Structures are given as structure tokens and as C-alpha cells.
Length: 358
Image (tube, rainbow, N blue to C red; front, side, top):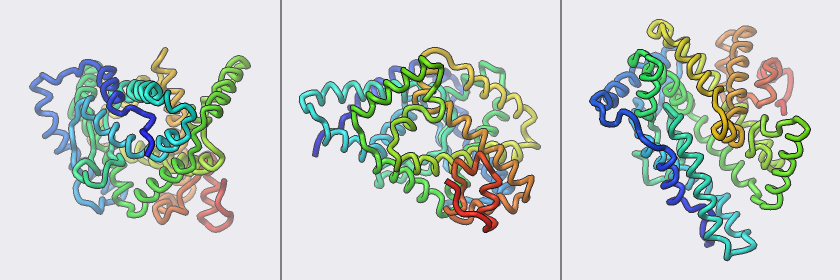
């Protein structure tokens, strides 16, 4: 079998270098973070279950406080497994095998730089990481990147108890979705696998897309706005799958934000301020950070999530929570991205008056 075109060990080293100094690791407050977040995660999980009616089928949530380096380790393992079909195709189609070592290092450096930057930004993450099957202890975990959480609290003077519960509510909502709806996790992973299987890595296609992006910029158009490079490089088959994944993730993120607000309403008087600060944090990226966000599609995803929240509000306004809860009935009930933008299309379809919208 051909060698992988990504040097994953180099990616890990670069990511940890980019992650830089990890604040507050030596503070006695950091040592109290794990037990407090375990307690708040359990509380958040119960609040979410009461609000949504979704109860995890796999038992109580496990909270894990991670350093940036530990978050990098987990995500490198995940990407290495997840992207294996694509990297194998790239290796098999390499026209100049003698360039493989250089390609591996360049790809590893690029992947490491992106993961390292992300490790300085992420606060919490419900683990849907696709890790080797023989490592169940590293799956179904609610992660908190401790140094980032404490640094943000310190910078903005957040009440730590409130802020940590606020984070826990969002992540446990995602866990309730993926473990409280029995078919959702395998369906999502199946879609991801379908998109990767349809990938056709082609250097000439990449060059053509890069040329189109540059030419469009000269005309004042931004081709990266609708999903970054992943969307531009996608094959027609992948774009159809990405539309379904986009609709699903818009729904889940919108549902996460709304649930977080409703479940924490009696406990989090500062929730509005937390949301404003994080929204400003996302939108104020400049220079290389802003370019990375655009290239990997983060800006487009944020827009999709806002659309997901609007979708939920519209559906509930027209049919109450009972209508919204129909999204959990089966994979066929999930909205596409087109339906996220046009909620009435989804309402008509689930009421039996129209077919699946594209």
C-alpha cells in the first residue's frame, strides 16, 4: 500500500508548536477545573434532557478537561482515521513518487498549522471523533480545553461558574442529539464517509479552482463565501452529500444555541454577554486567522448555524415544538440546506404535501 501523503507526526509537532504557551496550567485554579466541569456537565445534561426530552441512551456524559496539546492529539488521531480513504487515493494517484517525502512534509505542515490555530480557539467539543475502534475510552466524551476556557474568563471577567455551565449546556445538547436519537450518529458518520468516498483528489482540479478564486477576487466576487475550499473542490456527488450534511449541522447547531438559552435561563443571567463576546471573537479575526477561517469554511458554517436557529424559530412559530420534534423521527425528516433557508418547504414536506427538496 502506498504511503500516506500527509506526515501526521509532523502535523502533530507543528500543531503543538503553533498552539504555543498554555495559560494557567500551573495555577491551582486549573486543578479545580476537572471536578467542577464534571459536576456542571452532569447538571447541564439534566437541564437539557428536561428542556428537549432527549435522554442519552449510552449513560451519563463523561467530561474531560484537555490541554491544547491533548486536544491536538485527539484530533490528529481522528483526522488520520477519517481522511484515510482520501489520502490513500492521493498516494495511489501520485504521478511523481519521488516527490512523496516533500509532499508529505508540506501537507503535514499545513494540517498542523490549521489544527494548532484551532487549538487556541476551541473551548468545548462533544467528541464525535472517529478514532480507532479499539479505543472506546476516547470516544463519546465532552471535551473542554481548559487553558482556553480560563484565559477567556480572565480576559473578559466572566463569572467562571456561569460561563462553564453555559459551555456545558451547549456541548451536552450535542451529546443529547447524537446519543438520544438512536439513528443520528450512524447516519451522520455515514454521510461523512459517503462524502469522503466520493472525493477525487486531483492536482489539476485544485489548480483550476485556485485560478477561479483569484480571478473572481479581481472582479470583486468571493467564491470562498459559500463553504471555503472544501465546497469549491467538491465533486457534484460530494456537493449533494454536503448539502445534506450542511442542513443537518445547521439544524443541530441552531438547536444547540436555542436549547442552551432556554435550559439555562434560570441559572445564567450573564448568558447574553457570553454570547456577544464570543460572537465578536469569531467576527473580529484579522489577517492570517481570517484567511484560515475563510479557506476551511468556518465563516460559511457560522452563517449556516444562524440560519439553523432561524429555521427552528420559524417552524415552532408555525407548528409549535411538536412540529419541530418531527426532525428526530428519521433521517428522512432532516432538512436539507435548501429547506433550512426556506422552512416552509420542510413543513410542507413533512406534512406530506411536497417531496424532498433539493
